[in-house]
Image (tube, rainbow, N blue to C red):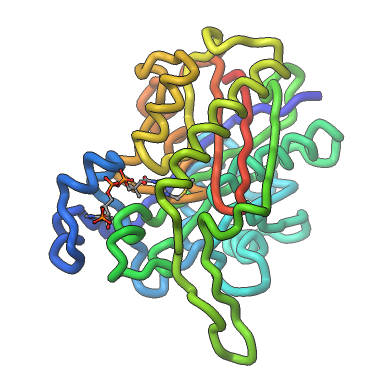
Amino acid sequence: MFSRIVGTGSYLPERVVTNDELARTVDTSDEWVRTRTGIRSRHVAAEGQLASDLALPASQRALQSAGLRPADIDLIIVATTTPDIIFPSTACILQSKLGIAGCPAFDVQAVCSGFVYALTIADLFIRSGQAKHVLVVGTEVYSRILDWSDRSTCVLFGDGAGAVILAASEKPGILATKLHADGSHKEMLCVPGSVNGGKVWGSPFVRMDGGAVFKFAVRVFEEGAREVLEAAGLKVADLDWFIPHQANIRIMEATAKKLGLPKEKLIATVHHHGNTSAASIPLALDEAVKDGRILPGQTLLLEGVGGGFTWGAVLLRW
Ligand code: ACO
């Protein structure tokens, strides 16, 4: 038994914030942000719009593209760092908004690697015969955990959601997966605050050592790609598309160069939604499926890296 993606969907909040708009409130410029990151604009959720609100239309679109109804789903996994509330999980809230009950639903917290982690778990559930149709979602409202007066972080992130339906299949599908984590790099990228006794202890905003993150991401992207390709007995030349976590175009292009992968095989959507953490890979995937770039039989490499540090890769045949 294998697993295969049979539907994709995504949702971006209505409000678009350009670099020029940010430059009115923090000391930055469109030129600085574009040349350092590739980002031109990002979407920002409306007041009161939560991770599950973004996940719902993304999930409905994925179900529609798979030709399935919510009742066909037998497992929901939501990757998010910005859940609606402390508990219940955003997956349980999404389940209720989809109008279904009974199937297991849980969140995965692996920051920007969350979607790759969630997809790997979904694949294991399907291959062990415990699920047939899994809804896997990445959804984030990073706008809530950004210090909008800190130019070194607020220009990088955005809000959005992407979803896929992973279904049991006699042919693959997912060819190989590899996950990693190294908690010793906690300080490199974190939101160090917590809630205690009704108060926030520590900072509730994203903190990052940008240069260190950049180097780490390029290194583990290259290692992860080679590792998962080897596990499937494939080579870089066998790849049709590389869909890395959409953090920064320079990280993605540097990785492609190290791998010897032509830039034309890189799917990059970061310019119009910024870094949407766990949502970024399914957002890029959905866009490339809908615009006809991704075709049946092609080989795709999805790679995530994020706070933790966590990283991982999923190699699949479309
Ligand atoms: N506008 C203008 N100037 C800025 C801004 C800004 N928005 N942000 C920082 N600067 C300044 C800094 O204060 C610094 O000034 P100084 O030299 O006077 O101290 C200077 O710009 C740094 O400039 P560069 O060295 O040219 O910046 P660099 O090329 O390192 O780019 C960046 C910085 C974009 C943060 C880069 O390091 C990066 O992309 N790192 C990866 C970060 C990332 O992608 N994080 C996402 C989360 S991680 C993940 O998703 C895996």
